[in-house]
Image (cartoon, rainbow, N blue to C red; front, top):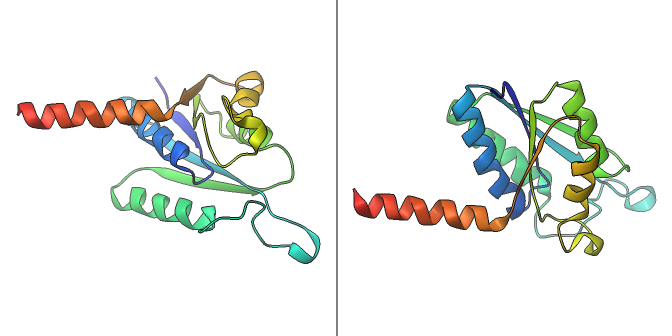
Length: 155
């Protein structure tokens, strides 16, 4: 069904919700997971610093997640691209390169205020992706947790 599932991540909680669904698809199909991160960095005197200020560099959180996935035996590849282009353009480009069957992404991430409603990244990706896009909202994680808790109680 899905031999290559691409997970778009910016290290946000929204991306983590999307990972749950990406792993579900990989588990159902026996495919591989390709994680893609578009690393936006400042130029000039600020060169090397993340474009978004935060408590933790998103790359650290993403690499930690990838390491944890490897430890569980998950077939996952991390592709990090440093770019000044729109992250959606970079993710769509990588999806075409790896012949992804589906892109899984969150609906809210670390993006600019302009994407406050659906998320400018997700909105653009839906229009330019070379394959289907599964946009996972934060509510999906809450539902998954709720069903897991119900299943544990009924056992």
